[in-house]
Image (cartoon, rainbow, N blue to C red; front, top):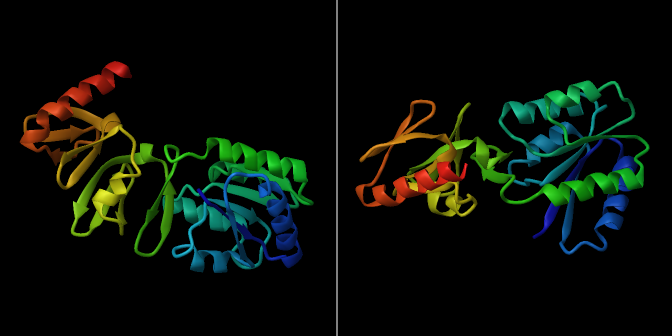
Length: 234
């Protein structure tokens, strides 16, 4: 499976050096690596909806919109894209907790430290940990654990989390292929995350937040059995 890493830095020499290190790191990896380069936070935000990435190496000290402001904007949109900050100062480390940065690397970037961060990311990066959602005007990385239920609306999928509803351009059939066995189809237009199910009736499922979704009669027995097994396992 290919990996895409974006570099966002307003120093072209720094971009060139990071690309060289990424090429060296990926030389013996069993996957293809794509590297996207951005000279400003604004150019990254402009391209990101159509050119999603798996990991962002982000400079903090940039003109106009800086790296920390870019990270906060992504998080305010609900995007949990993994971010490694590249900075010449340690003053920002406290702010990194707010945006859940993967790591900080101080300039000049130490090769071994960068490689260690990338190796750790690859070890933890699995489809179960994170999925990519293509919305109309943005692409988001979120954990499936954040999803309460999904609803088919026309050719799109409305993804209901605790905080918001995301409108995904992908149909519910294709979108469901990204989800684990914790998600069940309870109706032709609905998929629920078992971890958020409060109760199951003959014709509806009630979720922890009080929302209810329809339950197909023909699926009741199967859904109820899986709900019981899920909580016995837990």
